[in-house]
Image 1 (cartoon, rainbow, N blue to C red):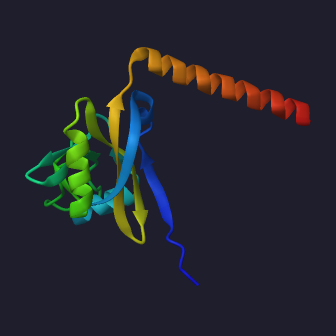
Image 2: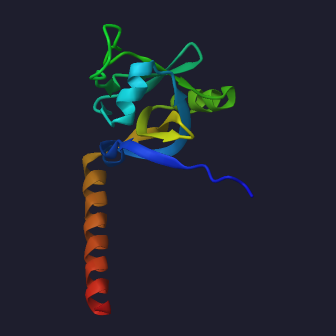
Length: 155
């Protein structure tokens, strides 16, 4: 019987799904130092203002905040250092082709641990306009109202 791969989501970037249309997503490994992993397991990180970019055929994550590990020593990590993302060459080529189109960017969506390894989900995103945000909020409100009414009918 095949073993089920379990992933436990540590942190999600909810604002990214509100501000962007996500077209495609990829799962990437992330190069970390020891104290960063310990801090991530405690959930001490933030996606605020973080983004991914291409440089010389590699993908990097910029401005991803990981808090200092409390029990770390003098060689604790830098909180906002640039971190390399680990992807296959085919995935990097697809990302490069997609980002060459106008208006697309790479945003981190979630950080989780899968089989003991830290993984980050990045998405190819296009910015939403203000009216798009209003429309998606109206859809959520309408869906919530329908669910409420359906629940009251069942009871």
